[in-house]
Image (cartoon, rainbow, N blue to C red):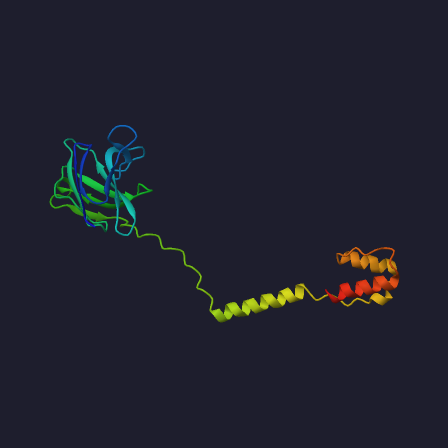
Length: 204
């Protein structure tokens, strides 16, 4: 989507349409930004900063150095290409949203000696690629894994081992029935207990 903004006097923005948004600092009308020409440690300029959202979702910053009688028309094609039909500035920079490193610089007639010169340094960034997702497993593979899991479960939970009740004493029969969750009557005869335990065993 094409955008058009007219910026006057350091504060006034006529936002005709689009995704070019003036970012106001916490105090005053101008930001402090590292000077990208004639670089020197601690050298900062007063500037206006616009956040520009591209069609691909990437956000860049347009940095406009402050000048007297500021008047600038900004047009953007939606893909990181800018034109400036009306300009009273010397240069404009395009930088990343999270870094002061220069991506593109536009130099106007006072510097270029003629038409606006577009100087590409790093270029407009592309959106970050999404992380690859694992491909879904074929149904046959999923079924094989399910069968393996069932076999493991069978191995982990083997069937109840055989119990020879007849060889147990009365005390052992009572202890075995308690292990199975049945509290049999203690004063029953061994024959009665054996019959009751056999019934428990048959129901396991």
